[in-house]
Image 1 (cartoon, protein in one colour):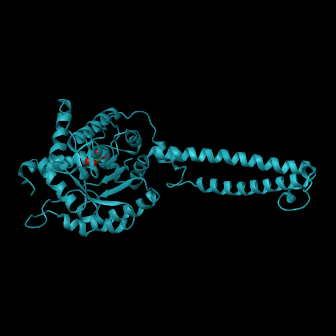
Image 2 (cartoon, helix red, strand yellow):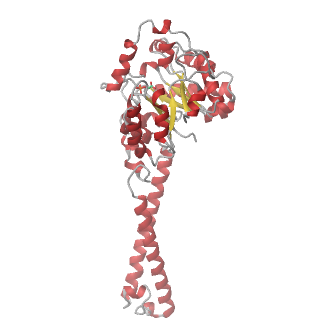
Image 3 (cartoon, helix red, strand yellow):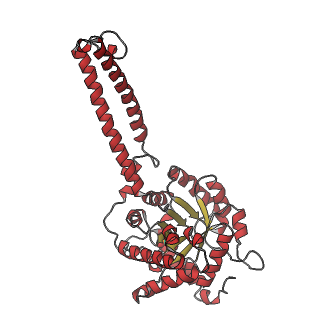
Length: 392
Ligand code: PGA
């Protein structure tokens, strides 16, 4: 089973101090989550501080971009060696904003992906179609090209360890989210494309995550899809609590169900033990014994009128007493509330998200959505053309 992978892409938000404050609030919220890979992607400037703040936790730290070149005269670029020396674990590659605003190409994505893997870091490779491409029925063609060229020359083993993020461009920062049907169809298509390019085993192991207006309110529904293995979150990843809720919604449901079944079975066994304990005590009382005797006294030795029967009854009572105590302690430990609790899956954030089907248009975009929606307008109009292609 693929471990869910959930990343927060902070884009051009948060100072170094804000990033560290976020980590302080966020870490305790996901402290007990060991079944989801969690990654935070701040700006370059905040990477080392965030790597230090997340310390020995399971949380990875990702750069939002990287140069494919090892070093040299590449003004404004950051190398993989620099990232690795700062404890960075992942790199987001080919985000649609980099493709659209900074002219990144599939060939560039491929060079960066291969360089990242060779440097021992983990790439998160983004693909996705624009609204115009979707409306002209070219979604699968675009994705086939992005996956085909972006991952070209990777080995099946490298693809098996890869994270591919499907982010429909029209859903990023807009409040519009792909419907489960749309996401399901595309994720399945990408997996088939990976299977034909790298083999079934690699395709089955590769994690394909969804990005584009993922929120606490729609995450569970998307994560429940068989081929959706997590989320790349923008706006909702800026708040520790909302991102923690998305992480909770991404936890493996099947594992929760197993834990819930276990707790039901144990509770049922405990009830049986309680009833048997009451029965054996009453049996002794009914024969003139007393409860204290059942735990070692001599007053009930005549239960059933025979010494042998009394011994069996006494032993049964003792066993039931011990089982009663062990059962009570076990259920008390399991009943603890909190992220790591066995019952957190029943009423934790993940299960509170079971809402009706997501509407295509989110009527209340967050501040972050609005900021992102404004970003392309803020950028100089000639930026894409004027920006020289990054060294590939
Ligand atoms: P969003 O951004 O969640 O704000 O839509 C997603 C992304 O760009 O990765």
